Length: 366
Image (cartoon, rainbow, N blue to C red; front, side, top):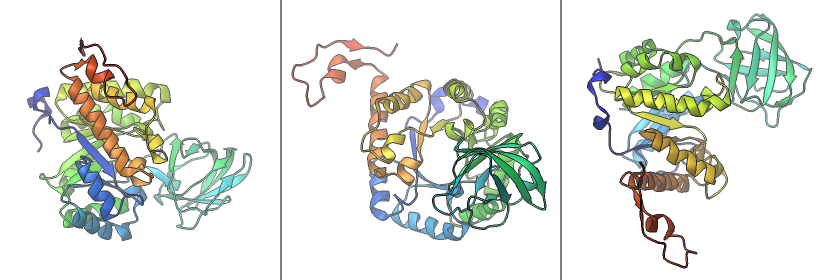
């Protein structure tokens, strides 16, 4: 059993803040992995929602050949996603579509969903959103593993996109693919696991039994149920991760900043590390520099008390994965330097266009 979180104080938490980077098509090469390591990454994340089980062994071996840094396996968890779709599929409002469990290549008339048993758990009247409201559906009929639905809002449908259903169907904590992936990860000496859509402490216990007491479990808070059971989850897991993206599928967007602060406060009070993910540097998927809003978001997330940050699209599919990691490293240093306060000279004197020395004077965080 993990030690009780009540026995840890705030000062016991790691001084070095974690930077977890997701690897994907943009970064699964030796040059980028080396650059990310030099930028201060503390572990590399494999996202099973976007990794075929047939490829997992090779991906693990390749990463381990390139770096000595830990690898974190992130499960698919209890979620529905689209399967593989043809390129450029769009659905039109008012048309009918079939939601199927077969592993077909989807088009505008038939859309495959995973896991295969999810469709049987839907019912007439269920409302569905694909890819954060890119397209909306209403289920009309379910029979023989096929759901007939009407498009209520048209839009693009891509491969492996998140699907949200209301009311939410009860799904197993681990997909069959997750169970295979966990077994494979354990065989390959992986000791860090992120538990997606963790809805209760029982899920943590299930994973602990599979991976052993010497492994670290990061419980991802990304559902209403996870928030409601936050304290029990925190007392069972080794750390928490707030996935703001998936959480916003079930919670209104404007509530996410307040929930983030509340979850971080609770984690801090229980002495358990807490990380934050999603859209930290989203603009750097396509641009070399972040926006001012993103910089403010990252610094304020750290000021809230977060112990680490997670880059996803920025390093998995972005054009500038190493630059994104370096930017997080820079922001971490700025935050750490602010703990004792800054001189105005520090804040105003290092821009290349600054002509005059800034007046000196201490700025305190308090």
